[in-house]
Amino acid sequence: MKASTGERLYVHSRTVEQADRAGVILEVRGENGAPPYLVRFDDGHERLVYPGTDCEVEGHPAGA
Image 1 (cartoon, helix red, strand yellow):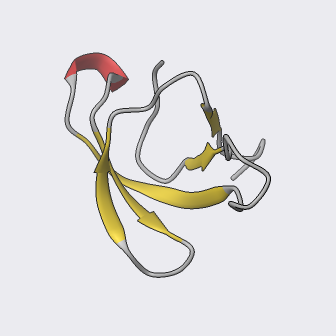
Image 2 (cartoon, helix red, strand yellow):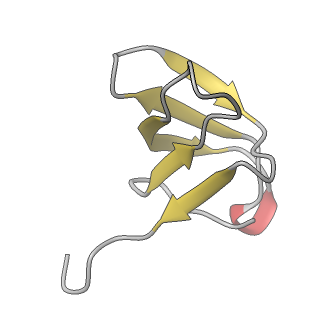
């Protein structure tokens, strides 16, 4: 997985009872866009994330 600062990271829930999470990537700490990523989730919490198969990155919209 590769990402850049400002892109959105989505973590999909593995259970029905738990909601998906989304946030903005604040820092890319790996080389060439590789994890880990410092993410500020929509609830305001910040966490260092090593994304797994339940994650996806949404790039910047065209022209942004």
